[in-house]
Length: 259
Image (cartoon, rainbow, N blue to C red; front, side, top):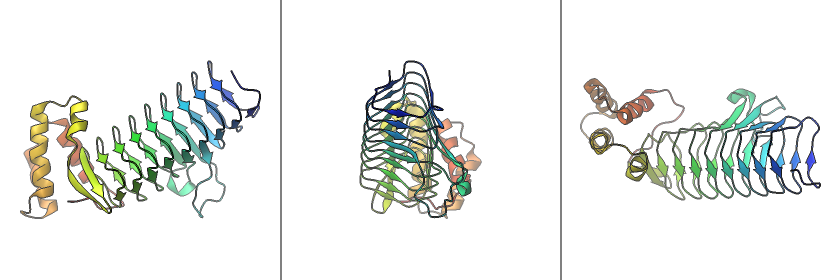
């Protein structure tokens, strides 16, 4: 069902069982998956693909050009996954040639009021952005992350799997998996125990992760790099510890958020 006041380009692709409310505008490279619901006053332009059963609330802008002075009109796109909820006043910009030409959002994400996803950001599955949380360009957010209200994440930062960012935080470096950070500028405060419990992590694994986490980030013996290498040499089998070590070993444009 498409409301008569909405403007839909003739080349727009719309799946089955899609609802488009009044005063929406959809451009010619837009693809809306089956079962989506667009409430009203929504602007989707550029090369945008939205997965099935995603719900978009009023005054959302998706696919507009990036707020980057280096952008010169190159063809880039936005991909949004299935079963997402995108609340009022959210903005999602297309990518740039220098950043991979893609801004993407995974499945089952919730973007609360006023969230901004800048150019070339890559966001995983099951991510929650609270009201007015903001990503600068080139940010990578892994699965199962929660970003608190009014928080801002610096460009090129990475947020590891299962991390939680407290409200009104300014994040200027990488946030390691399964951690909590808070403050302006944000500091590492501990493990995201609540998030681990929600994922049904075994108590024995949480206990081992806690020991490793405490040693790497809060023990002052040896250097940070040496402490990481010591943990690697012990060859833990727990998945969460492996994810943490992989994150710490991968290349990054930023440093890490530390206590």
